[in-house]
Image 1 (tube, rainbow, N blue to C red):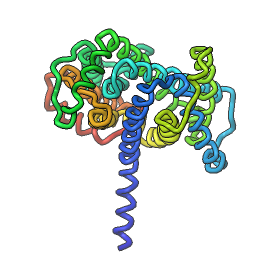
Image 2: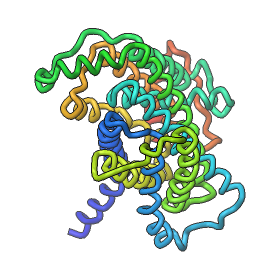
Image 3: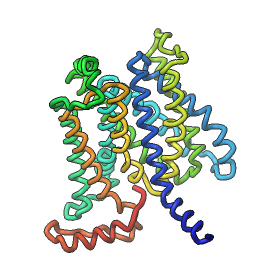
Length: 369
């Protein structure tokens, strides 16, 4: 019985990162649906970002003060500047661009476009010479192919709508859905896609910087609280400027707007940052982003029921291409955190036997970008 309990404990420890990211993606899918409803009802995305981080700060700060007391390192100027930048990159820039893009498109479109994140991260690292690329390496070839595939998929989703895919549970709401689709015309789709893509650039910077910051400030709850607090202040400054004279934008009642602010604040700006930090510390940022298509699938199913969003063949094909590109990039980056003494082997494309040997060696390792 004792051995069985020990084995169960080991299995649970191994499963925790997977359970964590699945829980994370389910919560993010819920946020996309609730946020889209609130935005459709006229809620300002700038004010929404402020409220959600204010809620997150109130919820997370007490836990950070109590639980991180013994492990929280001394705050330095360097760490504080990194936290300021973190709170600007994701809570302010990324989220405002993401929700603006969602306003112009749909919840499903926004969730699908967000899957270009790993490809953007790789592309940025390559441009800044933080990523090694060897054209004769099968891993580097996978990264390049995956990046090109993700870009191609995003372009297909943006420019090609295709025929409507009829779903049994949305047939009764086709009239409303067609009117909504007409509103989100091609011009709006392009605007939304550009905003979401720019948001993903900011998100990629956030993920990289968060991983770097955790090395010198390994207190996940405290880091989350600081990001939410500074994100609230910075977001409020942006909202006051962009919503100046519009006092009504700040009004909120016991409605969907309030639910969206509380839900996204507690889960997506509070719990999600913490879970992401914990999993990233153990398995790396690539592992975290590998499960992002799960959120897209959840959003597509839920939005077809709740928001009566219609599915189109062109966008479905584009989403599939993006996901395929995503996993090419992830497979190529799977081995990036090996010890610096272990060099990535260069493999000619034609030598299929050597490829299999190398794949076997690489699959056994995982790490941080």
